[in-house]
Length: 96
Length: 410
Ligand code: SF4
Ligand code: SF4
Image 1 (cartoon, each protein chain N blue to C red):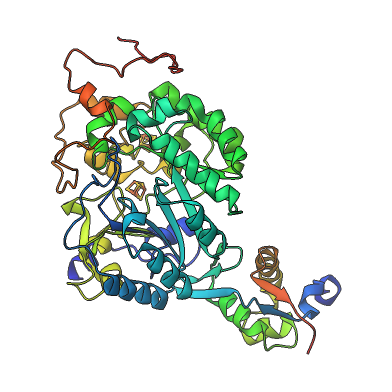
Image 2: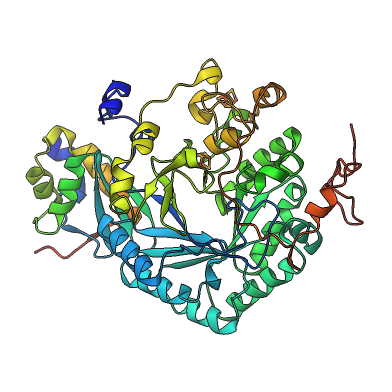
């Protein structure tokens, strides 16, 4: 069931953009992109952990696992990651 | 801190909208203004910081660099530099470069006086620098009335120089007043002409603005016009989230609908004093001094004033208002400087509670500082002289006055 509806992003390799700095905040982090000057908020610590794990995880699914996020919650996290992708905070990279 | 424990029985929420997080403050500000100097070549009638003369205790170049180093460590990603007129500090361009080199982007406000073609070319070659030219009228007549003779031409020349140098997306920053609220479309056209973005902000009764607020703040029906204009054009116009009190007209405007003072907003003044908000330069909102109190981070994170501002506030007379969630009682500085209770309605409350509050008993607080020049310079706006005449109740009507209410007396 879950595999059938799985978002293709889960199998892709992504990374935090080199132009982005994450500033820890009590609720998670604030992300700032020095290139497009966009400011975004990561409202959960697990999302921060997942974003930080992206770069050296084989896939997005791996990063979510490493951040300790239960599979049932993945759709919500993938949605958040897609949001970050639209403002170039995270970038797709070649699979390693 | 013990005081705080008593006052904050409510803990920071772990879920819910971001605005609730902001209410409890962040580890570093998002919107930090740094006024580099109180010196200014102009003497605008509504100057929020009563600028004019340089304060001899102004931070030195080295001290300013140390502030930037600290902002970099705190990951304050950009800072709004203002004054006074920041560009008349001889080390301004050096500090600009220093900030950018240390990952602190700069947005600076200027009246344009130093933006000659060479400076414009330098700015066009930098990254992370935003320039905001102040203009308070779409015509010289309306602008110079409050900003002083010649100031319109100075601003337009600066915009032209920036455009010629290939600087992209300068900002034209307008304080909306009773006189220029009829010129919103013209401001937009002007911005388009110079490849700039229009930025509208609210007139607050701060600094010298307290003296002219009664005459200059938009009338209730003009606030409606402004709201409708923002609803129609808001996507292409910046507001610094300054009009959230207008949300009580109906739909919320985009952006942060919350007074961010001491929570996500603050001001560093030219001598290193840290205030809750650039519009709240008054002893009551002074959190500390970054030289005397262990640096900016220390002041931001531990000052008693900021802890208090980050604790849940009472909403007083606004409690029963159905628009409280989007308006939250409006602007703290506007209330304070008009002598209204901080937990009640904004003086420009669009539900009309401000007017009745203003009509009641109130004491306007005395200014705690004034840097105005004591002898009027040649750039002084004429307005101040005119308003001293007791027989004049309304601003003078000029040939090109477009305000339908100009000269109208009740
Ligand atoms: S005091 Fe007014 S200007 Fe300052 S942050 Fe609050 S609402 Fe904004
Ligand atoms: S009563 Fe208070 S919350 Fe309601 S609109 Fe007026 S200022 Fe805003």
